[in-house]
Image (cartoon, rainbow, N blue to C red):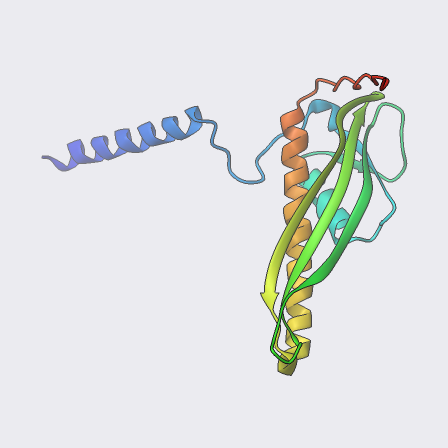
Length: 180
């Protein structure tokens, strides 16, 4: 085979592979798109300095949204009604000393655009576990803080994927059926 023919074949295979990836809906992480109505978004929260809020506002800005400091007519309202984090003991030694912890992060959010719900109160929870060694208290405290920030960033990406999947069609408010 000649050198020119093998280059042409290689280019053809590369082009074919790219077409297959594009056809299956593949997107690079972070390359999602927000509904157009979220171009201007106000984030309401009771935890204005949480790791989750910082990660969420960064993610919104990266995807082209203007994050407002105050509610505004016509802007999307992303309400973070719960933003909680903590840890639980998973296992203890024979001397009743914690050996393994689970760090969790939980958020509950809703999204309204022009007074209509796109996402109604939805809760997302992520967890990670880590081992604990009482001889390395400072290092383990630092590890826990790093895990907590990573969980917040993961939750921010999950919230964005949920919003992106909602599109721009408002969710109908469920009818209340009286119990007999």
